[in-house]
Amino acid sequence: MTSLNIKSFLQTLEQNPEHADILTRANQLNKIRQTIAATDAIPASINRHYKLGPLSQGTLTLLAENASVATKLKHISPSILSKMQQLGWKITAVKIKLQKPDFDSHDNARSNLGTEFYAKAARKRLSKSGIESLNHLARSLPESELKRSIHALLNKCCNANSSCKMQ
Image 1 (cartoon, rainbow, N blue to C red):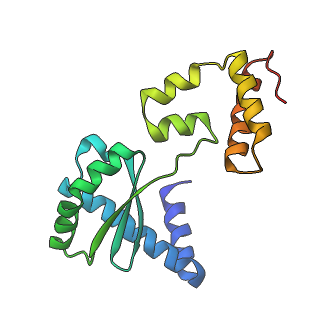
Image 2 (cartoon, one colour):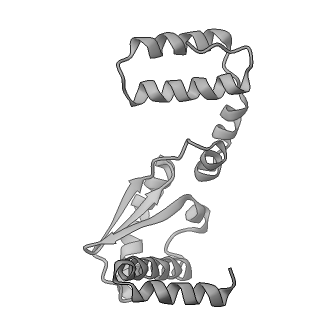
């Protein structure tokens, strides 16, 4: 899509009352992102490891991809708040949340988490006894998120390992 087509598309959406609020919020978050980048409110070392969450009732939410980033953001949140307020933003608090990783896609998990740990773990295969242990654990669990996660892990392992037998 060319930039002219995108502008035309966005203008059409802005005229639709159902979409105007969403576009206003998206533009506001984009401006906040630009402000944070321009003021170096967040160190470059963690810039790629968080996302902007909603701005609601004066509270800006930052979504950290892991606990380490969340801790760093919590330490500098007073500074972020101060810089944003000095630039005229009506933000009264900065809230840090740990973002739930997307493990549905191997590529997304690696890019979202960005750590060597997950890249190494993805290359490893479960042993036969590991598969048997997980199968036994899954059979003993009631229907739950944990049981579904174990089944998803076993499915991925079994797809990569033709000798795997899931029960």
